[in-house]
Image 1 (cartoon, rainbow, N blue to C red):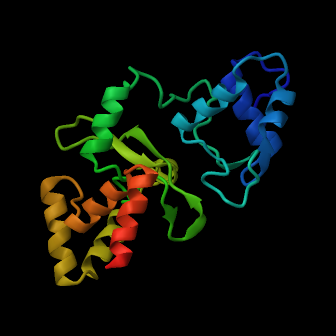
Image 2: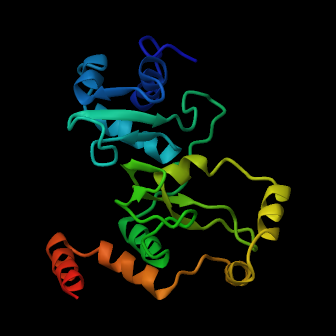
Length: 221
């Protein structure tokens, strides 16, 4: 791994090296620390954010309530962008804002892998909330990759492939109702949700004032 202090690679790669070697997974830092490490480099914050497209997970106070308002945490190291043989996930044509919104809408504004919505807390990590992004998923049956909505956690784990035996064994334990639902998903090639899940996702996307009105109406009975 090159030295981030002396390497002549671009700023994004140097920031990745700094995070991996100086901060480490689970370590916290502030933007002031980042700017001190890279003085006189403009938009170093943006270069750090660019790493998220390659699976790097960097949480702020909004996603991790254990952090101070000015802190960030390196949750996971993504692609080794300093390796010349590594092919960045950002290679190829970029995704426009219109495409991004179309993909979010097509996927119901939830992660296609775990079903979590943006801003929701993970059931097993209550201090961490999901952030949705767009990723190129596994190819469809016709061999064409598709754009899909994924949360930051599943984006990192997308390269971890389960075994055939593990999936088959889990299917064998399903109750008949769950098995029928899985068959429907496999037949359609996508996970479908019931109307209540759709309504919850719609509620989550309302402005704060409208959510408060809906909440008041429901709690009033």
